[in-house]
Length: 599
Image 1 (cartoon, helix red, strand yellow):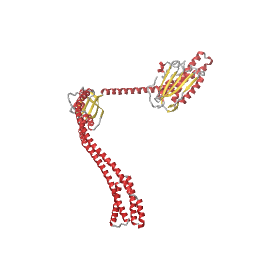
Image 2: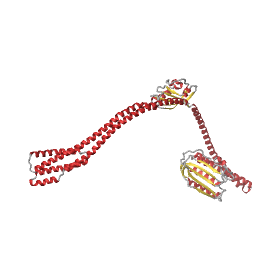
Image 3: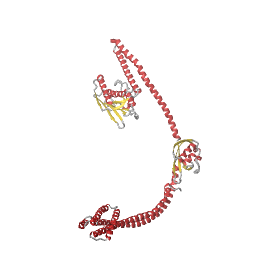
Image 4: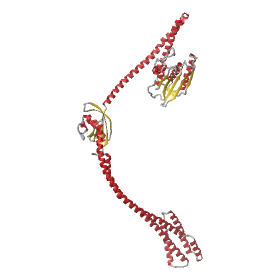
């Protein structure tokens, strides 16, 4: 059975790793020993260096003493050629020895300082010796005393030698320590070699056991993968670079009518469905050009003779038992989905037609409403005018019943005129374009309240209204439409709270977390039954009798139209005898869309 991918990778690296371990066993101890030998050699060189410095200083001291002895003998009156040779020899030897000592002590700054002082003192001492030799007999004693008392040489040399001996002691200790470390390193390297060899043996034994276990697990994994692959109901096939079948699952064989083992045969032999040149070309690109095939839609005929819409996907992958890449190809039957999409498109097309029809009807209704409103004005003026003329013409001859008839005619004409005006406003709210600008809602509410208070003082002077208006924001909207909205809402609040004294009207605002402005108008008036709330914002819909409260039934419909055109929502809450609260929202961005308005 083929090995798993980790096992193959492990086998591929096993031999290089073994060679590396053997190399480490042989090379690392050798390198460590070389390092130890080098350190021992460096320690020995440092000891020799210290000894050389001491020897040079001893020779320099001897040369100085030889020079001084010869010079003092000459000063004492001894005249011998050997003394001149000693002076010349010492003078010739001192400078090279001094230079050599300075060169040897360059690694020690303190010694260099001492050498500088020694050189200065020595040069002065040689000059003084020359003065002693050149002085007259009566002056020699003074020059000799100056030579003895000044320009010390032996003390600095002794200090230099003592310092070098101290350094020598430290370096001898370092050399001994390095030698001990070298011996420990040698024994440690030997122990490491033994441990590495034992470790290799243990790893080899464990690897053999693991390989045996891995082969068993690989066989079981292959069997399990085969079962899983056959369980998948989506057709799957693996092909190589030559578009030959490597393996396939049961769903692939069932859908395309494959019998027997077709491994190694061209994919085109799997049925007419796979002989399409475009499909084969794209599969070659997946394997030869490293591309991926996603949602390639083709029509294929399956074994049952049905033409199905198949969605082909393919991508390259590596198998643990092959060195080349294969392509995993899946073929998904989306025939039902395509049929559903076609049906949905047809429904959408029909819906668009219905929407166009509704839009046409709405436009016709708007035009009809506008036309009727204008055409009705002249007859209404005639009715009202002639009723008034008739009343004046009859004068005192008109009885109470006739007077009542004329009053009904005039009142009906006025009510019809008001209805026409409201219809015109409602029509204009639907047809006119939005002129968006910044609107101060505080000013609109205050202006509307002032107008309503003035009208109320004339029409119903006994009705007192207490206003409670919260701080209103500045919004973006159509100023005229929003003015109409507040006129209708606040006017309704005043009208339907006539029976409550004093009437209390709350106008509130709050900013929602969803970026909406939430406005509300609450009164303590007559209220209404929420069972009829669905009719509240319809045209000509009234929840109270005309004899109880005047009105045309268009005001709240106009409110809804204004709010809807500003992409807002409007709804109401109430109970009979407990007042009503009308809510509406306006988005901070008037282009934002909201969901279905609440009722």
